Amino acid sequence: MLPIAMSGIRPLQRDDVPAAAALFERTVGTGSSPSGLESLFHRLLFEDPWQDPELPSLAYEDEGGALAGFLSRTTRRMRWRGEPFRMSVSLHFAVSPEARGQATGALLAARMLGGAQDGSTTEHAIEQSRRLWEGLKGRRLALQSLEWTRVLRPASYWQGRVARGGGAAAVARPLAKPLDALAQRLPGGAAAPARLPDGVTDEPLTPEVMVAQLGALAGWADLRPDYDVPYLRWLIAMLADTPSFGGLAGRLVRRDGEPIGWHLSLVEPGGHAELLQLVAPPDETPVVFDALLAHAHARGAVAARGRLEPPLLDAISRDRSVLRRGGTVMLRTRAPEPFHAVLEGRALLTRLDANGWVDVRGR
Image 1 (tube, rainbow, N blue to C red):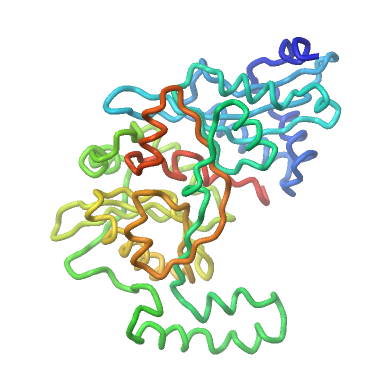
Image 2: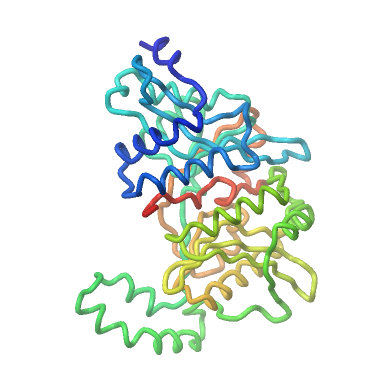
């Protein structure tokens, strides 16, 4: 069976997208429209300026030539101690029930992880995917598989967690705003900072600024992205088209006029600010984190949250953030040193670069 299944694996083509979208919806069930899902797949897999013909997405054809499985991925250009480093990011994975008896999923994963890339990662591995990765020498990143939440408006946050439409929610709603205002005045940090720290300002973040400032602000990272303006413009356009997560908000943070970092998030007024990336030298990370909270508060978010990254540990530990289990993050690198850099906090590998922002719900 295995040689037959392996021989059916080939690069995913543009013409495969309708069948791949239909298969993904049939096996995963996202509730997305066929046209919306097809559009997302086209943009992610064939319009990305960093798409790499040596590292294509993969399709599996059954004996009749029909698409019976696929694994989509993108390539992220990074630098490992100044040298080019290609990171393969696994996105969507689906196998028809009829093809599962041929170990098709394992073979697709093996072909992907055995490619020419220097490293591979995925953000939301389900249990079956996790076992496949571990069987192919991938490892779960325990820290990055946690999610932090920092409440910004305590009353509104907890009111929103009450059963939707229930009587208790209706009673609590009028009280939320005045209670949140009171929490801001209480000593001890019951609510997150609603203003920028003294001497700190922020301004809109642009692709040009990100490229110009990355070296200075992320020089501590042995492994970091290798951004260019065309890619970031494409990425920002994609981020702006994620309505289920809220609007895009990116800010460059300055202290006494000098850049000290940036934060990039998706903010939903009355909902959460989803942090995608925070870049700053270690000693400035707490200040930039506070600037993130203040900006999210100003945009009307009731809480901020994100993936727990090692560089954020100091800022999170001194704050009143709550931790819970998030998506299972897997990583495999060809050489051991980059893997240890990620574990030890010497890498900038965030949700922005691992495509943790990709959402198919409601498309």
